[in-house]
Amino acid sequence: MIRAVGLSKRYGSVDALRDFSLDVHPGEIVALVGPNGAGKTTALKLLVGLLAPTAGSVSLGGYDVQRNPVEAKRLLAFLPDQPFLYEALTVGECLGFIGGMYGLAPEVLQQRANALLQTFGLMERLNDRVGELSYGMKSRLALIMSLLHEPHAFLLDEPFFGLDPQTLRLVKRLLMECAARGMAIFLSTHQLPIVEDVAHRIVILHQGRSLAVGTWEELRRLYGGTRLEEVFFRLTSSGP
Ligand code: ATP
Image (cartoon, rainbow, N blue to C red; front, side, top):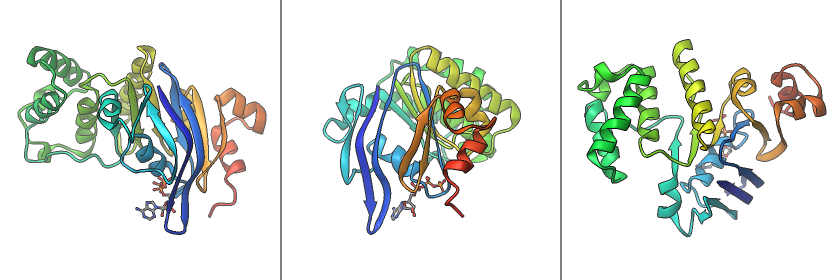
């Protein structure tokens, strides 16, 4: 569903990402981990077509994100680390706006929005302005907005930051349920224990290079250690 081939990005003299290749299959959660500045956000922005690569290509469901951006973007949802939300709109207006953008029929929009609002405990905030929501509530709203059009590929940059334990558990469960229904999920995070819980495969990125890719079991067997943190430090120890 998500395919990167030989993806590279250079900013001036900085090689932010070098020769990055990966397939994320339907039903799979792949986590991208790496130190600050490793190139995670760059990789995600390249995968969703927000950045043009210096070399290499990306396809989503077979559509090249640079050559067929509309078809590719119809299939995906991207949740950035700092999602832009329309603070002056109410929660209901935001959902209506997103539903309209994706051409959802009003009854489909209402049914999906209601189910997601219930799941994320935001139903009673439907008529409140987004600017009045707490950080965690805004994060939950951004997730709802991402899922309204039922994407086939879901890419998330640091989705677990700042969430309370209940919301964290909810988001983890939601991602696992989405994958079980066939969604391809690719996320970046610094929360290594969560990665152990939810990821089918893990990519360790360091200085723009993919150093290891595999299941947690495979990485543990290859590099030793009982926690992902140990493997992470072993592979990225040239950092600060
Ligand atoms: P963090 O964990 O701190 O969010 P990251 O792994 O997401 O880091 P990136 O944001 O992808 O890392 O940055 C990778 C490298 O590219 C860094 O050296 C960064 O300074 C550089 N970089 C990122 N964006 C730009 C830009 N717009 N212009 C120039 N250099 C950039």
